[in-house]
Length: 356
Ligand code: PHE
Image 1: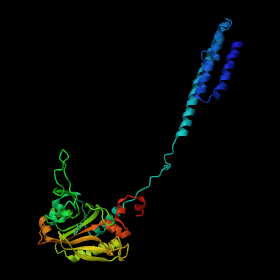
Image 2 (image 1 turned 135 degrees about the horizontal axis):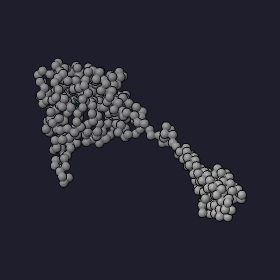
Image 3 (image 1 turned 90 degrees about the horizontal axis):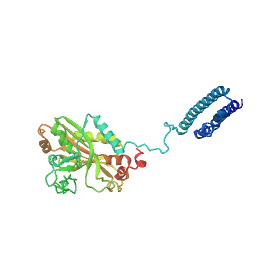
Image 4 (image 1 turned 60 degrees about the vertical axis):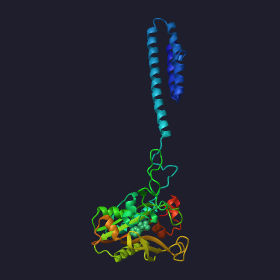
């Protein structure tokens, strides 16, 4: 029967075309060409009226079967195609997240000042010292008065100390610079006072930390730098203990080949006082810009705790003696590595910092 053959032909042809439809658009096109209003199958179904009445049930049944099969073949192919397309897309767009990035972010290192500070901590911890902390923002009591600095000491002026000025609501300072009690500490020595106020001797402590001074940065000054304060208080402590301790420290940090010298000096809070210099490694004692042509670099101040300081802090100055010192960490770094300019430590230049 002609119509049955035509239906079969459409079905066979569709099976081939389905395999060739490799996109959803092509498949939709095929569906319209077969089952749309003017599609081949639709047109054949319209010829049903011309079939002889006695054949109609059988032909109709067959035609319906064919239509059902074509419909499900189209749906099945659509599902298959969607799956393939998704798989291809996942393959195309997948990323290997274990691959290294195209732009490599350079790894930093611990800053030279931090590692030297830790090294200094290790040396003193090895001698039984505690490491303590203190406030960056402190008062004139801790930074000057209890350290025996007279009221008119020049270091108290706003030229040498950053005062913290509270701002009134209108934004006008309530304090004139230099008249505020609150300041950025200019030395870690205030931590001596904080410690003695709260701790019974024997005291063996160091305090590493940042200090601030209104200085213009140059080869050997920075407006913000790092000190390590040291304080020892016990019965019978002598200048010999001070010298033995600091000699040991200098040998540990600089090695045996650098010379040290103790120069008499004055600090309000120690008596007698000294400064300790280490021979300049840039010029080996000849004199250069870094050592101000002296051949020596000052790295620390020290002295025996003035009994007046004990009195300010409530420690029995008849019973106890002690020594204190303050080490400049940037200068230690400069001496160890022959840095000609302290400002190198502040630039954040990775080419410089990664050498250490
Ligand atoms: N605070 C002193 C300074 O900043 C250093 C120092 C500390 C001196 C302790 C003596 C004792 O210069």
